[in-house]
Length: 329
Image 1 (cartoon, rainbow, N blue to C red):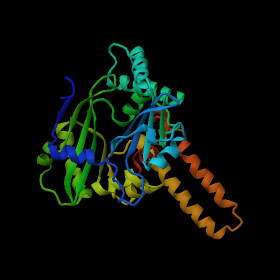
Image 2: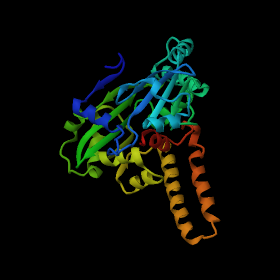
Image 3: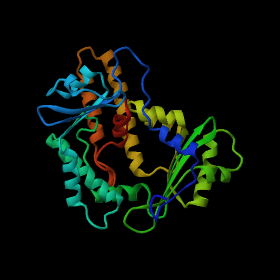
Image 4: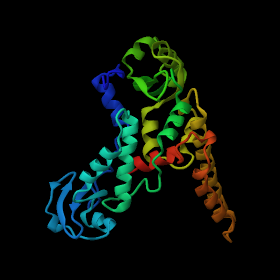
């Protein structure tokens, strides 16, 4: 168990490894002089003190030009990403975290406090990064997170991620929301018990997902939201999806969402509209040689992720776009 009030069960070693592998960014095939790995630098402002490469280990900081633009350093060292820490930045992070955390704060409250202090140091320049994939994404408040959790999975209900391979249940993740407040979860479960309860299956997840839903509700409680798909479909979408791909996958039933809460329906609708705008812009390029329509369509497509969320429960950013940026190569 993680804590005394959270059950962790139903995972074999293979099931857990499969779940984690879903979010592993696949390295592109090796190309000569292509960026590889990442670089962590510790400096005092004018001089580098330590340099650590994720593949090559510690390297001589004197071989790195400093101070310099981070993008230029990454290009010269041929790395895919770069983090810099001013001497004492991590100590300052812990000092700010310790001064703000309160006795009785749960794990979520502590995580938000830590992320807030980290963002401050990032904005102040004590910590630097390249590229800044999530630049501008706000850190939500605890009240916003609680409302979002309430919208997706109310107390006493469960959420499900089920991944299939050639019709067989490849792995699954069930998270159950505890009764009462504050928002917390009391069970994290894998597919071991569910496979036994599903019974005979047809080999097509579009039909078999109903058996899995019944098994989840029989063991863990009513289902609030469930996502069912072939593992390769989900892996492709979270790492390289373009506008409209998520909505298209749902429409074609490459992904089955059952049931579908409003909080997910809104971003899917925005994703579908952005995809339609991109197609319209491409068509306009063929029939609008003067170039009047196409810029307007591109502007509208960029504005769509900023549409206000329904009911104020969403965290204030496009979740599908954030996930794509975070996991993309």
